[in-house]
Image 1 (tube, each protein chain N blue to C red):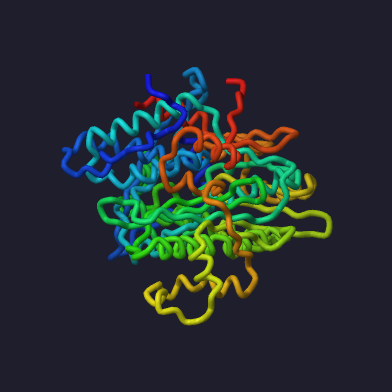
Image 2 (cartoon, each protein chain N blue to C red):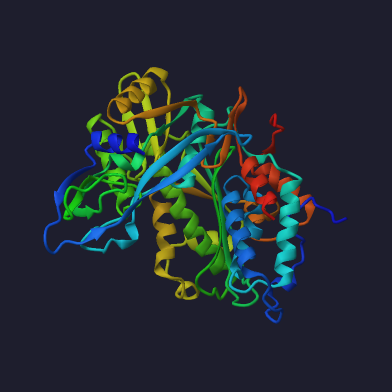
Length: 250
Length: 240
């Protein structure tokens, strides 16, 4: 009997093994499609579902095994979902993270973010970046740019809802160099190759859309969206995301 | 079926005309459905006339088919704000949604089976949209949004399916997901007023407090709001 405290094992090298033959692709696609919708209230399986959905073209038997494990995890936690406590306040808090060169086939990095209204998780994303980053700072910085766009959208949405946040938004990023690039306005030989659109971050920062703040990697909740974790860390982060199970009367 | 034809005629869905030369026809058919209750008991028999939209040609029988739907992040944001501000959260559903839309294009359809032709050239010229037409969802969306603007709602620019109305005493947000509508606001009277206004133009089913929406189960307690997809998860497991 496998330990089912997490939806995915920490080591999954076989996922990227392209020599395995394709197996029952149509079934695989159907389940992945269903899981993608289930992610709406279960951000904790977001990372693995995102990863598995990259193999719908030619899934191997191994991918099916990983899916089976997710299904078993779901079975053990049916009523798991997001909880919005009444005691929360309206204050945007965003966490941005990336995993450099996480895809071992293409060497693309992964962007991830999660955004809260203080304690209420309202938006998150985990996505493979569309260009190769030459450094981890570059990967972090482009994750920052993506997060920044979402924050701006949420600020507009709140404004339309006639809600004024208590304070200006805070954006947490655990990469010191990415924070440095965002703050530093002077021309930088090293950051020349970073796409122009990424520098939207600087502009937004100057316009005081948000504060850019440091966070220790250990405390970074967005970690759960970029990699498979062991169950200690997983459990800690799940509670940070505000995920709770209720035992609703059946 | 005869009842349905009467209802469609009462709704001015079509005019019976002779087919002008050079125009093409689209087909239609009746679709029968047995609505079951939870344990498989028969609730009612349902019949619906559908147009064979796949025979429509782009640029002639239809132009645009796009209609926006709400972003899931918008939905979650509204739930979170409702929890924090202790707003009311209500749901309603609109009957025969797609039959409300007006058609701009000239669309001719065969007479539905069940209506006898007086002469061979007789066809229906559609004035309202029908299920199955390519533009059905867009026409519905336009009809609903123009109605909302008339009753002094403003459209959110952040999410086009979100509409807002602010008065001195109340604030109501209305979110559209095709024929499902969520109302959230700080004042129950404001919400009731909007429901009544909607009811005068469209036939609505008031589902009361929001409990189940797009497969999300929403439970509101005195501590906050919990959303989960328990039923949906069970369905996934049952199919594998």
